[in-house]
Every structure is written in structure tokens, then in C-alpha cells.
Amino acid sequence: MLRREALRLHGRYLTEVVEQFSVCPWAKSARTGERMRTHVVTETACKPEELRSLLDDWAHDESVEVAFVIAPRFEGDREAFAKWAARVAAIRDDVFLSAPFHPDPGESSGTIPFLRRTPDPTVQLVRRSCLEEIRAQDPPHYQDIFSLDLEDLRRTAPTKTVAANVLAQNERLLAQHRERLKSILEAIHQDRRDTYGDTQPP
Figure 1 (cartoon, rainbow, N blue to C red):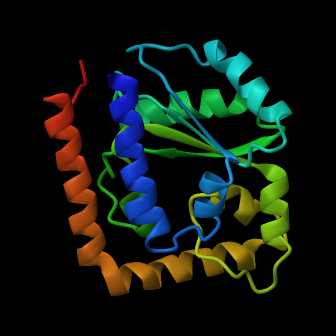
Figure 2: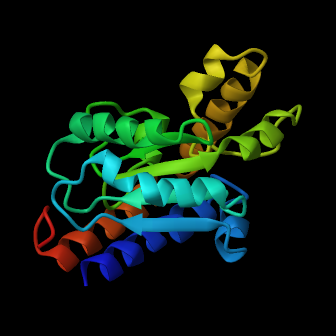
């Protein structure tokens, strides 16, 4: 039940936010083309190393472009999850770049925390080779903060222009659709509360 509902809620977030607003224009093609994988951690505690076999499988399967590890029962706050996500990502950081997503945006009202409010704590992994193709576009023809490690982009020339464009495009997106996006995100999170009956699923 937990796995089914976590996947359903995550699916709402992908289709109603990411795809509907073209935050990542190739997210839908990755999903419908079966180039996306999702795993739900059903335990309250999971050592990152326990996911090595799964991540190895994803890394070796070159059809996998985007993957998500969802941890609905994670015990810890946003900062604790970010640390756990970093340890998960480090297992196959030779193949994937990563980004943590969390229901709690923290104290920041910035673009990235606002749009990364998944129903459950989630680690996103994106194959590095896919990003290399995106980075080669000049100018970039996408609105994507999810599939890019912005800190990595800022450190690596000449991709600072790409990172700047990504942020600028998504800031324009929020300026135009903030209230609608807020309403959709709130509805999804209310769905989560109704489904699990509390902030922590059974």
C-alpha cells in the first residue's frame, strides 16, 4: 500500500507540476519512453549502501536517463535528508548527477525550493551523459532545474551561462504561474496528508 500510494503521489507531482508547466520538457518523454525508474524505500531507516545493487543496475542500463529514490518514511528533517541523499548519490556519482527534493522548502522562498516540494523526500538521479547533451545547446532550449546540479554547473566552465539561463527561465515561470503552482502543490500535499493520515506514513 505504501509503495503504491507513494508512486501515485509522485506521479501527480511529475504530471501536474513538472510536465504541465514544462519545467523539464523531456521529463514526459523519459517517463512515457520507459527511460525513467522509481524506487520506494519503505523502511524508516535505510543505509545508503543498501541501495548499491539498485543503483548499479540503473547505472549499467543505459536506457535509464532519470531515476528517483522516494523515502516516504524517512526519519529526519530536510537537512538530514539532504545529507542522506548526498550519500546515496555518491555511490554512483560517476554515472549520475543528483538533486534532493523535499516536502519542506525550508525558510527559503527561492525558485528551486519552491518547485522541489515533492510529496515525499526524494532523490533524483540524472545520467551525466544526458546533461552533457543539454549543456551543448547554446542557448539552452529548456526550462530545467530538476535535471541539473546547479552547483556543479557553476563550478564548470563554460556552463555558468546555462545555469543562469535555467534559473532565469524558471523565475519567469514562477512570476507568471506562482499562485496556480502553489495551489497545485498544496492540493498534492493535502492528498498526501489524507492518504497517510499524518506527516509520517504508517
